[in-house]
Length: 431
Image (cartoon, rainbow, N blue to C red; front, side, top):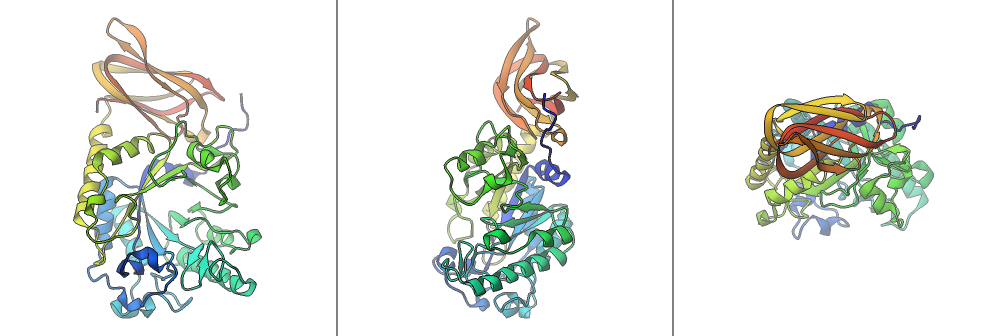
């Protein structure tokens, strides 16, 4: 038995309970000819920014439709354009004619999140910033300059302070590609976050990674997939030989709780809106396969959404999100039967024999990941217990699909565990 099981923080449990999130990529380069990527190294005229029909409530309707628990907005992306009222440097909404220079999309977004009961998060990039000529975390387009790096680090700290102190409680802060620590020559952001947003999930640096990127942008985790990794630094920036494998699978012996986040754009690798790309919207079948291989493998699924130049979510994208949300509800909205329990065996008796073809198993992760191997058995016609499926890791949630069987009861037998198993929920479905 193990007397030192790694356990999550309350905010990490809350994050894992959300299961599905969305991230809205919207920024000045949406208005660029040739797409946003050509303007990673080129500032743009702020007056091009003109989301004349901006409706962040409509954005959040999309999140609600798919069943998202949290939503993230790109407060400032690679271009460095500030989408809130800021005097940190003259490249943002204050310099735009839109709303007479008084717009604050961060505030609009957070207000809409609260209106729709969805947790708000903010994305910012400190590893790229066109205005400051930053690439790969360094000024001078990656070549570095000690004095200018010091200035940019102070700007990063002030951005974090403004975003964390002005808008009330936030659910998450997202540093794309991470943020360097002071020891690495980066800004000192952890004290700011701890002062203003102590209950916010932090993603990520070598000091703190309260969840991890899964290692791809395909919405898919490996199996088994554990919520723990060897150390926080395992998330690191360098492409070490085994780093991708650790991100993809985790490590059951790991000492840092950092569950997997499986991100993917709703439009096949379009993180920002581009015209006439509706054919890239992922099919429902693909999205649901990703749901099985993310949420069903102890991770969160994060969908990238692309508001258009008017500031609206395109209708075809809205429709697909609604279809996915409806399908999740259709398959898993109502269980044939469910229970909870602890110990090496948890039995679930059905009111009457029923056809089942899915099981959802959840550990009570407040006590850590305890199960290392399990088998699910069904009491089938003839009153004989037969194996239906088996597996290794469970964690927050494991969803398995199997050939339909008629069962009077099912039982979960934990064959290997490091402490007494604690099963938060055992449910069977006929999806």
